[in-house]
Image (tube, rainbow, N blue to C red; front, side, top):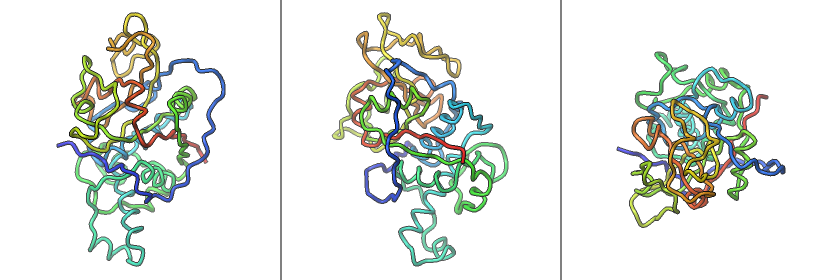
Length: 290
């Protein structure tokens, strides 16, 4: 079963976004940050927002030449986010009472909630706090170790910039910053194939729900139907993938959170401007070492 994150804006997050500081130079026209991301595995744990934000952070760090020798924990990020929101909803209760009355359950979260958590506690390696292999397989833990996360990697913090126009998204990507985005997806996205990519805006009258992905590449379709500047990532030569769109069309590659073999082509989708413009949350996940 596919679980969608609850991304409808609620005003719940108290995170203050930084003002956008995007490069003013002329667009290069294309960029592919896929070579800097962790390999796509079965990323089912947590939720879509907790996939998009931490993995955007590690991807941006690598694009800036800062090596992260592990994959951020989707599960830990999500569990900490849920625990913080629970405490915010019940400010008069102590931790033990919260654990008893309100055990953590998978309810979804907004991108900004996850950004706020990562900014507070940093990034944690997969499996580092729970033993075993570096994987997020298994149920969401009942209680995360907030102090252990903060002590382990307190020097990595995320700075999130809101991007409004698609040119903002392109400028962020061209400056080496990956962009998580959230919005509505319908069954044209869920059932994506190479022959029928989700290039249009999403229809809320169709089946689907709130969902987050992360944009990692932008380019334009060439005369041969391919984006020739895109790189080889995870064994896929993206510069030779045929795209069903007129030459000159701007297209984006987004990374989904349902694993390499269970969605699209290698876990990714190629989408058009209309799809990305219809997202209601777009952020540039810049990361600083402080």
